[in-house]
Amino acid sequence: MKTITILGNNSGRNAGDNAILGNLLDDFALQRSDIHFKIPTLNTNFIRNAFGRHRIQPIGLLPWNLALKNLGWPLYRAMVDTQMVLIVDNILFDRKFYNPLINNLSSISLFAPFCRKKNIPIILYNASIGPIDRQVGSRALQRVLDASPLVITRDESTKHLIERLNLRHPEIKIHADCALNTQVPSPARMDEIIRKEGLFTNPKGTIGLNVNSYIDDFNEKGSMNREKFCRIIADTADSLIEKLGVDILFTVSQIMDMKITKECVQYSRHRDHIRIVGNCDYTYQELTGLLSKLEIHAGLRTHTLIFCAAVTTPMININAYPKSAGFLRTIGMGDWTITFDDLSMENLTAMMMRSWEKRENLRNHMRPIVDNEKKKARDSVGYVSDILDSL
Image 1 (spheres, rainbow, N blue to C red):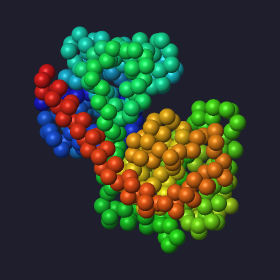
Image 2: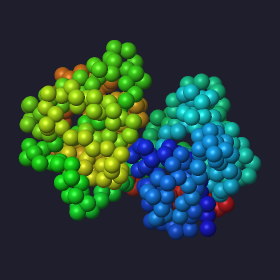
Image 3: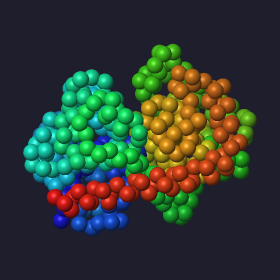
Image 4: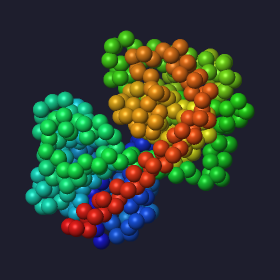
């Protein structure tokens, strides 16, 4: 039996993070049945309940486990008592570097030299890196890369960042996000959810929206506060309802975003045409199934865009993260991004109306590109397997 440790944001609060882990495990299961996965997490019960069909061992990161989240004995043991470490998602950045409650890079880089000494390879697996803006972050990332025989990234920007920082690095392969391979539940299960939530009853169709609570982090010019943002989103929803006669579905993929989602809805004049669904009630597969029923979707959270791509629902990126714009460029949707500082009801409505008019062409345009990206995400298993079997 082989052992692999998976390092990511595995608390269960974010549907995107859950999809990365779930699809990674599923992708490996398609090719191998001889791997035991160790998964450091703040929520061991969630990991067991959600992914217990696989050979997994949740490792607690709470204070009574002798850990301060990412810093402590459990992470050290998970990294040195294994045959391989996979780093997923976008957990290597230098923001708040010395705060282990937020930063993973500082802790991982502290233990990476022990992995190198024991010949335990650390591999970035369909992951992203950054931002890395300070020397301390660059040095820490170098310690991780020194223990790595391969970097598999999900975007060009990670490769460019490593090269711009002039870091020593192994071969870099550009693949895709694991979440692209999310499978929609059975029609019977989707019908059950749709009936329960009263969704998709409008023959004119339903348009999706998604918001994020980190308003100040995205607003570079400082010209928009939380209330203004919520009013823009609500006014956009109202405009689409009035112009097209559609319903609106807000999809919440991170539990912490439910509050601001409800604030947006409160500003709407047509709340009877709006519904909210979230990952507090539904799995990432179920949310993806609901997104597949939309005509178009606009969102801030990257993984709502990725879920839409998985089911070829045309999407608009309200550009909160560089990785979102990069992802849309990868699937041939680069023109469908609106910058946060240009966000207004008029601009967002106009872009969504154009997307509505072209939605069938956009679906057909995306489909072959996304199919290729899905294959690239799964192909990562083979490269990792070759390294694992050579140890």
